[in-house]
Image (cartoon, rainbow, N blue to C red):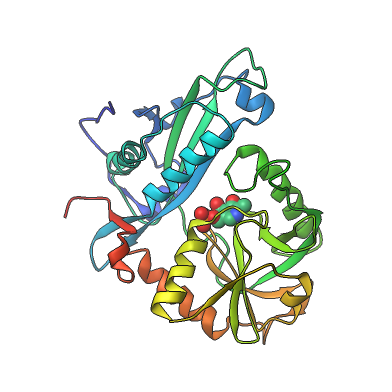
Length: 325
Ligand SMILES: Cc1ncc(COP(=O)(O)O)c(C=O)c1O
């Protein structure tokens, strides 16, 4: 059972953003703990072997509604549970209960502004054997966050690192250890003066970036790689597919994409919970379109911004009000 404190500080977004804390509580195995007390032992299996899974998601404040909406929280919790199953980590499987815990954490902190949330499952066995599957421990956080990328277009480099694969470390799951792959690609891109990176599969097809999926518009068709092309099955990707099909009436081609198709695309954008929908201005210094966000990208950005506060695709119940109405 989660404990609820008697007094909950209301933290305005701007105040809280100064020190990522400003956030008083985190959640540890369903219990509120002070931010400073959310700790993992240095000998835990997670720290030795990177055995752990996590989720990152967002909540959006609506000034009009004076309400905070958490976006697709239970879908993220479902993916968290799937990740635990695939990489064999013991832990909670009740996605509704996990969802309620996270919403309770936001309320306990009294946060009223755009947030990034995390749910992380660590293996906390102190003898640290690689085959340990438990005991696991779950931490959750909700922290104020604005734009991840800024609003101008991204200059993207295709990485010389290949995306890891389902035959080595399944990209389908959000496993902590997978992130070394994207990190190397991102460091390479930054070293070379780019904003972001995209990785190719071992077969040379476009996979995804370090924290985002990718779409392109080419020859009038919106396209994105299939889930069997070494990608995380992004929840934003799924939202964009739905918005394109139902709100814009566009057919989407889900098919392998070659690197050079990006060079000759009319539009390229990346998407993710943190990244949102962000246009790509150039790939390997080849300018995409005229370098600004194309029409389809702009439509999808607008629809996504409305969907996260429940104005669009309301029938999907993606946007959960955090505070009682
Ligand atoms: C490797 C990777 N791909 C794609 C995504 C986008 O996934 P989602 O839209 O579910 O946040 C993320 C972000 O979590 C990611 O880390």
